[in-house]
Amino acid sequence: MTTSNLTRLLANKRPWTPTCGVDESVRQGAEDALGRALALRVLELPVGDWVLQGESRDRDRLTAEMKMALLQNAADEQRHDTALDMAVRCYRVTTAQHDADAASLAAEWIAHGDHPIVKAAVIECSIFFALLPMFRFLGGPSLRTISRDISGDEAVHVVVNTQISAHLGYGWSRSLDQLRARTIEWVVDDLKGSGKWFQPETWRASSEQLLHEGRASLLTETKAAVMPAFFELPGSALPKYSYS
Image (cartoon, rainbow, N blue to C red):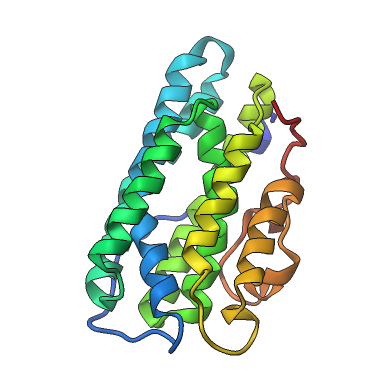
């Protein structure tokens, strides 16, 4: 990642303020999946912590621009957490059981031994970038807005974190990939409805493809809206890592 490319990438980000409507509905049959997806907001702040931990751990191996990008990315997670908290209050589809199950998954992510920047890259790439289109296609107007706003940040985060991971020589482990698969499966296994957005396999396959290929052929509709995905940005293909 060159300094000029990194500077241009950061310039793609735009300021935004978390907002949400009042008591909106979601598409019938998506209530449980969206409740679980919103419960995974519990991972937003840990992702910011991982980025800061990684910056501290490998500070001597990072350029000034890389450090700046990581610090900016970490700061964004507080805003994402605030926006998703507002959505939980607005949509009322997240239950205490959803929160408990999400907390258990979050504990596994936090305890996992892969490098913290790698964990941030994997979860933003293959979990958050699967959930954000779900918010758009199965949620109401406010979730569509939140999806658009967070996606703009995450598009930058994924490229920065994956390329810095490659620069440092770190990759994800098989066990982290397995945790990714279990996490997305937990979200979507009770979707009920017709059409591809209600098919769990749409989201399972997209999560896997996002991680391993840096693209999502089943989510091409995101290109029709102002909701940039990292796989739509020039030069943003994920590094090819080997399992450890």
